[in-house]
Amino acid sequence: MPVQDLTQLRSMVERTVAAVPIMDVHTHLFSPSFGEMLLWGFDELVCYHYLIAETMRAINMPYEQYWAMSRKEQADLIWQTLFIDNSPYSEACRGVLTVLDKLGLDVASRDVNSYREYFKNVTVEEYVDRVFAVANLESVVMTNDPFDPTERIVWQQEIASDPRFLTALRIDPLLIAWERSYEQLAGWGYGVDRNLTAETLSEVRRFLSDWIKKINPVYMAVSLSADFVFPDESVQAKLIAECVLPVAREFNIPFALMIGVKRQVNPGLRVAGDGIGKADIKAVEYLCAHYPHNKFLVTMLARENQHELAVTARKFRNLHIFGCWWFLNNPSLIEEMTRMRFELLGLGVTPQHSDARVLDQVIYKWSHSREIIGRVLADKYCDIARTGWQVTEAEVRRDVQKLFGGGFREFLQLELG
Ligand code: FIX
Ligand code: ZN
Image (cartoon, rainbow, N blue to C red; front, side, top):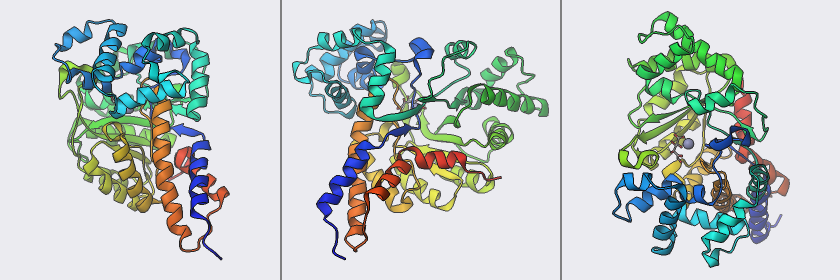
């Protein structure tokens, strides 16, 4: 059997990657029912915290002066600094241009007023539909924080659920700020004390169960610092072992660990002030090995952790790794990580998530990542086609659907007893 035409194969793969709708497994987006919590439009897009950090190192302005500005003033400053006074080829800047272009706006005009005018003439509901269509999204997973007072108010009302917006129960305050969160739990009627007594641990489990029943999350998640260790004598480790993991197993939902942040290395930058640290893979190995009935979703922030994380994923069927997170969500690192993961894990990985905070961003984050994932995937199929293996379009579609959410959903359904 002759080797199939590799040029035709490559274009079929890239066409299929473009055509398959995506489940975006981690975002900070909200459905329109959450009101102002859903960020969208030109000024929010330009004021993404990645661009705040890039702007504040390019100009010598006191941080508080920036934070005192209006959203429009902030956007005008960022636009002038990063797009006009400097060429906007950083990934976060390029992303803004990709969004404007994919929406059919005239990027060459650099006419900010026309961009703002576009958003004045669309409702948020219309815009959600438009963005999902342009980005070819099937669904997004929100980040739902029961400790966020604004979000709590929304959940106390009957909200119109949008099936495209799935939930995730985010429990950072519980695990990284117990000395404050236990008082909140007590105020909400949970019989907890600062000391992790049997009663307190039972009530924390009840709190988690109550919220799982209320919001039906696809997973529970936490962002952990680079110095996360487990097992450990810490309050954090005890809450994970005695509360999070038993409840996650009871409801058969994964525990998502996002490991490697160094919080507020520059507090003046506020939400843009977090840094990065290499974490210890031993904690992931221990959790997967000692809790075989629990499922773990893991993404790590340091480039140096990526190879060992992929190798660890080869060892445990209860570990599913995902995304090129945060400072890794750049073309050069997405390509490096995706090649390595496809070579080590085949289809057993969810290669990307957007982490979008502003609705518009899914347009660029997925346009850029589809291009890279498609290129890498085409290389992989060409490699096997050169041996005489016949690659069919149906199998490529099956594979891409798995990478773009199907494998993730299979992991969610996995029963480990
Ligand atoms: O912890 C997280 O979910 C991080 O993704 C965010 O805290 C971070 O600010 C972000 O949006 C990165 O893209
Ligand atoms: Zn995030």
